[in-house]
Image 1 (cartoon, rainbow, N blue to C red):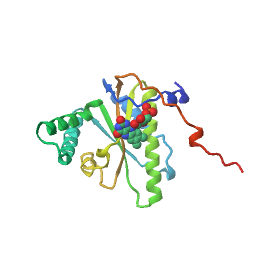
Image 2: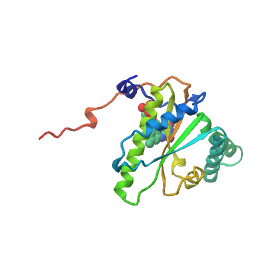
Image 3: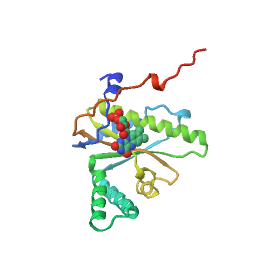
Length: 187
Ligand SMILES: Cc1cc2nc3c(=O)[nH]c(=O)nc-3n(C[C@H](O)[C@H](O)[C@H](O)COP(=O)(O)O)c2cc1C
């Protein structure tokens, strides 16, 4: 698959199963790190959640949601049950995070570079026949989650990349709107 085909063919795949072998996962992380990064700060960090680590993440996620909901009784239990299941939607989750540099420009550029790394991972996964989806949500911004991942509160989670074998048909592509999002200054 060439790069242009991979770019056009990639879709977010929310239903994932099977497994991602260690060698394939290592390659995806290595490919992610080919992203450009200003000053060669290599700002990205990858925390892999597999197996029962996903269950522990789900338990924490359910506790966070339970602490904030106004639901009670069976409805609260059901919400917690559904929330705890969320990390089990894929055999592997890679949390991509970035250190927050004291210099504001460096911090923005490091986050941008780590975002490019996530996109590299998504495209590489697609080219290898895997399915993937970039997820954030409230949990990406919680200190409890950063602590669970062994991150510093000042670190930022760029996204959770859910990976696995595609277990759904890829959603249809949206039309692109090049003219609507482009202006040309030529004089
Ligand atoms: C920063 C970021 C966060 C995202 N978070 C979520 C998420 O929490 N849940 C989700 O279902 N999709 C999430 N997505 C995926 C987008 O919904 C998806 O890219 C969009 O619908 C376009 O679909 P495509 O990736 O198939 O082109 C996220 C994408 C980005 C870039």
